Image 1: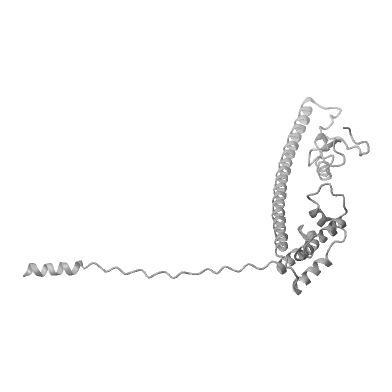
Image 2: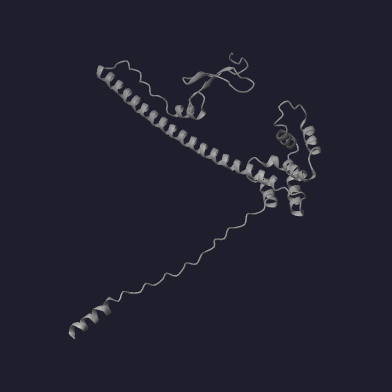
Length: 259
C-alpha cells in the first residue's frame, strides 16, 4: 500500500489526514485527505472569507516609543486578537449549524427518495402480476409508448441481469440470456416478459419532465380498487320509560285521611 504516484500533490493543511481506499480499482491505496469542510486551503469560499477577514497582527514599534506607548500597542493587539478569535468562533458555530441543517435535509431527501423508490418497485411488481394473456387496444398503446421511450443501449442488460441473477457463472451475453428466456416461456407468460422488457428501465425515479411509463402502465394494467362505501346502520329507537306515578298515590292518600 503506497501513495498514488500519479496523483497531483495536495497542498498541506492542518486538517490533512492519511486515508485508505477500501472500494474500487485503487483499493488499498493510501491517500491524504482534508477532513475540514471549511478548510481555507482547500475550500475557495473559506479562503475568500479568510482573505476578507485576516488575522490581526501587532503593529511594528516606531523608532521613538515610550514604555506606555508600547503597552498601549500591545493592549490594542490583544484586544483585536480577542475580537478576531470570538468572530472566528461565531463563524465556526454558524458553519457547524449549517452543516447539521444540510445533513438533516440530505437525510430527509434520502428517506423520501427511498420511500418513493420502494413504491415504484411495488408498482412494477403489480403490473407484472396483472399482465394479461393478450393486450387490449389501450394496453397495447401504452406498451408501444414505453417501447418508443426505451433506452436501446441499456434495456437488454437491465432485464438480462434479472434472469441471470441466480447464475453467477453465466458468461452469456444479455441478448443470449433474453432469447433463451423467451424460448422457455409459455404463451400466457409472453406479455409479462414484454412488459418487463420495456418497463425495467423505468423503475428508477424519473426526473422532472420525463415520461413516466411505469405510472402509465399501472393505469392501463392494474385494475383500480373499488371504493369502499360506508353503510350506516339505523339506530334502534330508544324506548320511553313510564314516569313514576308518585303524585297520584299521594293525592289518593290525602283523600283517605280527609275521609
